[in-house]
Image (cartoon, rainbow, N blue to C red):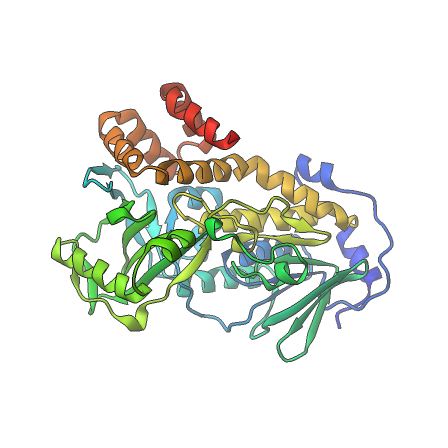
Length: 439
């Protein structure tokens, strides 16, 4: 064991540099009941959200234990796309991933269900494509370099919280304890289930992504400098994509789980084989699908939890629902939620019960409107596939929109600025989205 609650208070109460918002969140110290702890903070889950949280905490001098059920490096099903605004948002990221394969792209092929195509090309890269097996390992190493500790192969099956602290139990019966926990344990958060926070995502709030990340000697993109995305592909309430990478290609289709269960015939891999073959026939791909690399997974796309904390447990990444409801982008929001959770815990000082409210306030300020709007856009566009067609055609007819979107993805324009431009130039669409939000 690492020590007693008194030792914890002496560490958290020492002076640290925090933002003005963080100082507002700090509360007076209080007495924690006696309990042995394995760390001052346990971060459960070492994906991008958890690694970002652990790095933030450790860099502030907090004794941080990062735990995961796997051993790193480990594979993780994911499209693996990251916009350049993420690189701008996290100045330390470029160095952290400097030794992995990174494929930069500056071209986007966006296709509507009627075959309408919008092609965007920027003068500089707007995104990078990575493999999660490498990316996640790099972020874990960045957390360790900041001073965090790592416990691998600790699969959490039980979690409980009292006024004394939080206890996590593994499948083997071993326990770990801390006064604060950051729950970054993925879409099927065991901690969320055990604490009664989120027993199960509603079917309408979760998507299934059926994808493969296949080496180039089996399957490759014919246009390796282009990200290919089709919305409402062949009647699907979702998306299809080709993400070319340095030595692999990610190809997949995704849709709401409710749509998949209710309207999509056949098995996931049968759909994948047919999809890949159609792209080979159209000249977008060459090669064949390989079932060995097929890894379907679930994504929460209904927006963040209404309350992203319970007591002194803060939920981040997929565990908290931090995913764009329309694009299904998760890496950027996962890392933001993890970093903000870490900052909130540091800012709370000895008054750890203030960390949760501080965290909720911080993420709502930075990404709350963006994630809320993404769900409204998802429901509005997939409510009528013709709306998707109109958006794609509108991108060709309204150059300002294409430019604004490219600047947003590249990190040159904030979401607030993009939203303001769309509202001013397309008030009719804004009114319809507002009406949908109120229904």
